[in-house]
Image (cartoon, rainbow, N blue to C red; front, side, top):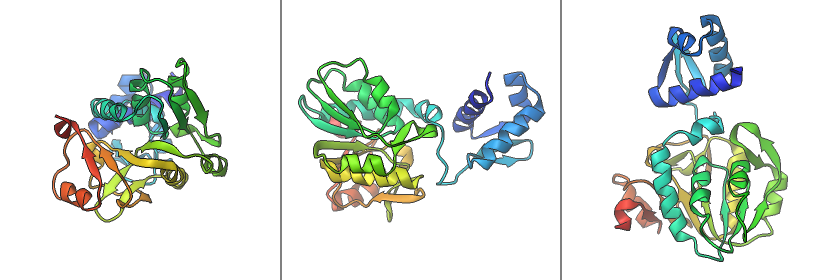
Amino acid sequence: MLAIERRNRILAKLKAEKHVVVSELAKLFSVSEETIRRDLDRMEKDGLVVKSYGGAVLSESGTSELPFIVRKRSNVEEKLIIAEIAASLVNDGDAIILDASSTAVFIAQKLKSKKNITLITNSVEVLMELSDVTGWRILSTGGTLKEESCALVGPLAESMLAAYHVDKVIISCKGVDENGGFSDSNDSHAALKRRMLACGAQKIFAVDSSKFGKRSFIEISGFDGIDAVITDRIPPEPWGKLLASHGVEVLCPENEE
């Protein structure tokens, strides 16, 4: 097993269990404890974990970006719920934008039955997911590849988007805060998502319920001007009243019934 694959599996275990132990990881991966300590040293330098006595915990830093493979495997049930609702909003013939979030890949999967869609994305994973779809117009933003997120970002991606107007923009974020609005862990991701929102007649955030009440590193958008939030369950108060006061519709299974 390659070291990067082992570290990704350690991150996945941390996402599920919140804490890992060096001795247990050494047995799990059939390597020495020293090898695991080196893995954790590297992961701590990358801002992904905080080492503790005999192990490590997941970093709470709002500036760290978990590898795409880890994010894709987390909160899968919630993302499937969100994807179903998102797909129901898209009509045949629509032009849409999807970001490079792991949620966007689930949405792309659910959209495959739609016809004559024009889709713009900065996600390498979304492009791969839709590579077998026929009858669509699929455009990549281009830009600089960020390996950990399989995303294309930067000035080239932003300038490409500036020329387009679409029916719906559906993007995700790392946190939704009562005072700060929607936020992300990385400034280049946030800048491109702001550019995406400017392209859309309808601006929609796809956010699983674990993101409410969290604030990440940099703001993407406040609540004003956002049309809807798709989530997996009704957020607790005061979220309903707060979002309604800004004209943001909450779309979730309970509200869909």
